[in-house]
Length: 316
Image (cartoon, rainbow, N blue to C red; front, side, top):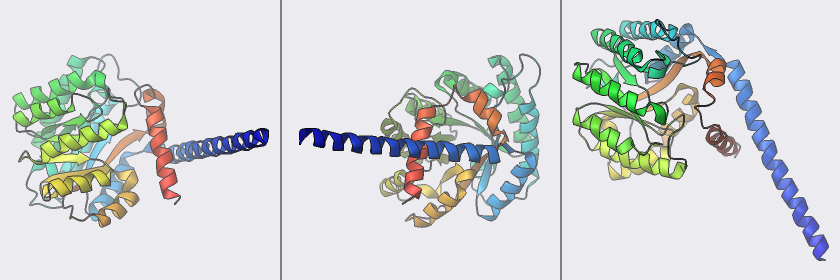
């Protein structure tokens, strides 16, 4: 009897393990096919998707994927691409001319590490982008990348503000323990924060802590009296924030990935509050090259877990 029971337990374990491996393999296959099909987002694709986003009631945040490392000297291709995106946005008619702040209109997002290998050169090039964008009434986000770039990102933001660029905001990632302190430094300048959980690697591995950190910083931001952006697909978190601050969405922009538009649209309809300010993020470039050159920066295990979770949720 004991042997039979053990055999049944072993068989059940094998079946469970095999099922889990099959799910993981299926998710990897789906992601691989999706990556290959959409391996490159061209400037023309960005124009087309921007038009669709605006027709759907969203503003846009445009960026350029960091693919191959920037050259040691000279101006990288990303610089010219970002300038072209600024020109594109500046030429668009205002979707809502009465927007209360520059923050809530179309924007570009810049990763400093894609501009130049040298921090000093990256700061100089960003200054040129900020000046060019300000002359064209376009807002610029400094992106958050990894814990190794935090100091440079904050330094760049503070230099830009000191130079008089009111069209520059800082992205703060809640997978870093410095998120709350960094947000406070931005608030002291009267500036704007784009709060994200994080796409790369921070110094908080526990995703529950990352979410709790996001919630705490978000509550501080929406109570600051200054418009900010909350970028998350965690609609449960947004509902909880609404319970604590029922009018937060009136002066806060909610931002999402363009690639998640069907999911986002369905979730927005279920929220118990209106979302007047919402944006979609899209990045121009070759996604396969991005994956190859940035694999060491991305927490692959976390992304796989989230993909599995999403696949299982959609299958029910």
